[in-house]
Image (cartoon, rainbow, N blue to C red; front, side, top):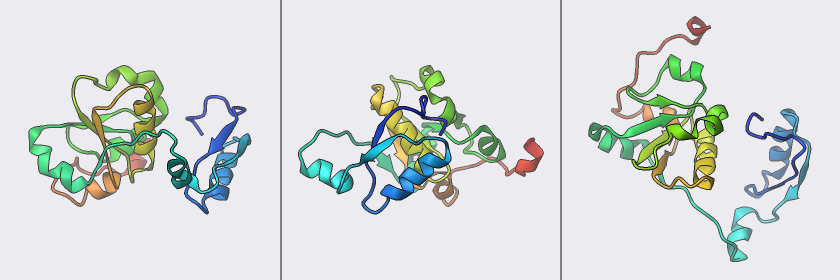
Length: 164
């Protein structure tokens, strides 16, 4: 809901088949009631029709772990409280809801990795960055949940209630 600047903006949904109603419901819960409809057949129908599209580079948490010793730049787009609770050592926190006002913090001359808790918010962030001209980043599938299952060092967990 924080990512839609004008809740009266009309939008056409492109969802996985069978997820159309869920998308409309989730948008309505945050005050957005101007969905025009959805693309029948989802993204596959778009591709079959020969329409242009972009893709996002993605990697597994294990792939990130295999190059972690090279000190890659890692951007965490989770909420500040999530980041403060626990995060990858040396990661930078730029929250998804603040991405548009912090675009200058994303390098264009150096590659970086982007993640959130499970992969949903980082894919939104990745789409925003891609739309604005960034191509030098990789989204981590499975997000922080998957990262914690690897050898990548994370900070000591702090109970979120202590962060209030």
